[in-house]
Image (tube, rainbow, N blue to C red; front, top):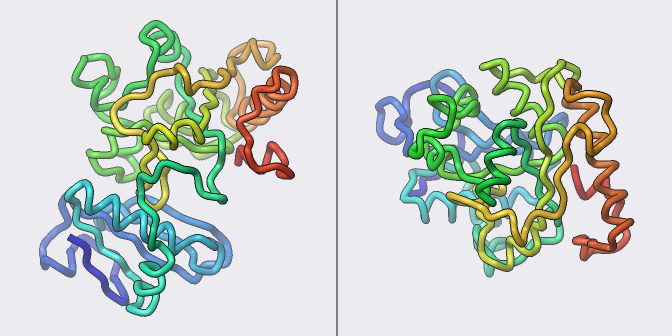
Length: 281
């Protein structure tokens, strides 16, 4: 079910039920922030929240539409903290779209990045695919009781998805996994793994992409072929050893990926005129 309200006090009491939130609830809330694009997580006992700046996020109406569609398809309870007029505007803007539509939108990156530890990369290559955390756990191959995102308040059903990102986000995840806690320091030393670059356009055409209002993700599993374009590892990007920082490894890997694209002509970028860095961020 989808619920809408003008304002929300961030605490552990669900204003719809009058009881504590359970894992079936997600919140999408607009903010007037001029400093950040989007925040996600759970605070003060509240449900997992996607907090979006209506000022900076130019496509917040599309994000709201994706959130509504994602919750509806997953039989989740979605709480929209936006005005009635904003809700109506979002529905109007979203008309003709779907959270799982088979094409990339103009503002979506044509390359999606997933980062994984080195030992996991060896298993992924042998199996020929990425698997979501819950699949790995069912196979007794997860190596941990819960994904690192649970420490940020990720609901259990997020474990059914393979998450993608850009910038240093994936490396921060790998670094945090190694420490067993959230490490946001991009200059912290960690053991690099593999940074994988996937063809998002091909994934969209094949109906694999899921949008929840913030993340772009794939449910259950993703075969490496035919979607993986290139894999960056410490030796492949020219580092002296596998110990680096998220900032250094991500930047070096992106530069080498750009060189690979230019050298091979395997250009997944259908929109001309944009710099590689902008497309990978």
